[in-house]
Length: 83
Image (cartoon, rainbow, N blue to C red; front, side):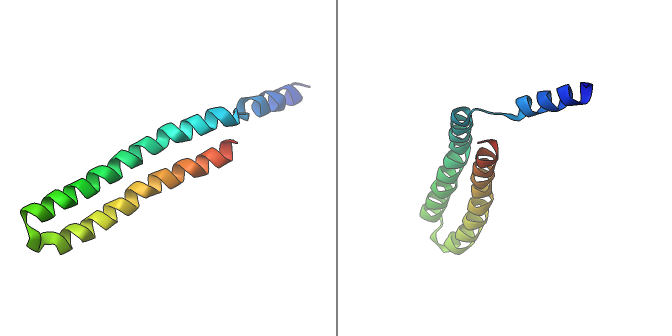
């Protein structure tokens, strides 16, 4: 009998309101949005200061852009798992 009660308690603990999950994803997407803005801002400033370094800056920018976007994709996967 106690196993049934524990299973029911586990099901109730996993149930997350989809609206709450959407708010959580929205808050989680703010960080990558700010990060992408900072990355490209730094590329523009670096290119303006030293135009010959544009190639290296773009390589670094695309790499870090991909890493930051993985955080946003991770957030949306968690959102769909919660709802």
